[in-house]
Image 1 (spheres, helix red, strand yellow):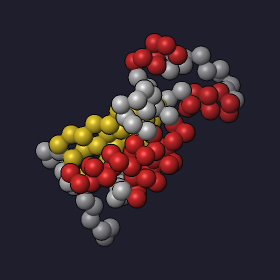
Image 2: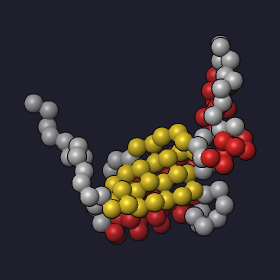
Image 3: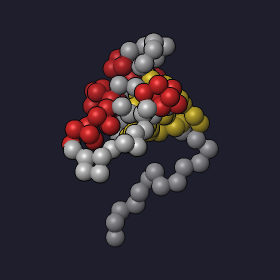
Image 4: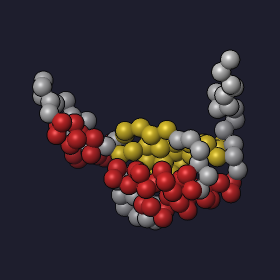
Length: 119
């Protein structure tokens, strides 16, 4: 089993990415807002100046400055290949600037992935 972590730089591509991952065989994935050190230093990715009474626009602007980190598991290397291909179809070649970073790590043990029926 493998752990796949993808940090996607363009949050507007999240829905197409999840659709492509589903077509590649991903059944479950977790999505988190994230930002990198470079973005923090250059653009102030984490804001501490949100007004006491924020508007919806304040939150929208904040969410657009964040990357999306998506992670899932894959049973075998063929699924990894499918996920990589699907990812690059959506965001472009990962060697290009501002596309993202995809990591694949071996999983030694996993707990809680398989759930039993409610009694």
